[in-house]
Length: 195
Image 1: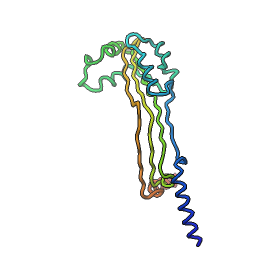
Image 2: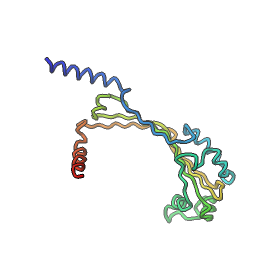
Image 3: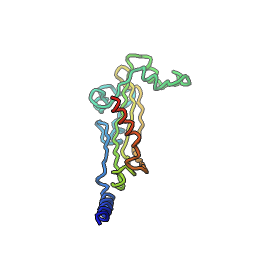
Image 4: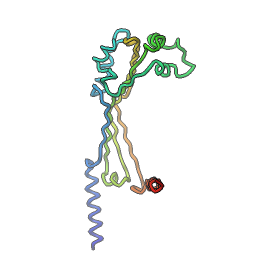
């Protein structure tokens, strides 16, 4: 009799969990930046005009490595690696702005900016997810990337790319559920014993 109540309880809990996908975790990954969307970043980037925009004007647009988090400063050596990755690309093949910048050596530098906003939301059966049998994840958001090259404080080249609309689905199945990673846990335990 006690076993029947236990089985009924487990079934009811399972049904309850399957209806409560709101109990599943979410993960928001956002790179701190002045732009809240792909379009906002692209709009600011479009205001940059090579051979006209100065370093001070870049700062006003939000492209300031000392104020805008997650902006990478790159040297002329990094620029060489980006634009001449192998011998099949010659110096003469480069954009005139890049050529002039590389000739200036130490007076040539750039910024790499990669703002993004990615949301991972798990969905589906909470019981299967909780016990690691099946985890479904919806990944959405946007990623923007920009390269700005400056010579003596003047923009000489710009390039952008990214993903305006990220939408991916991940469905991970573990037939053994919580026992799927038992080997890894055993090895971890053995490592702890060895310490």
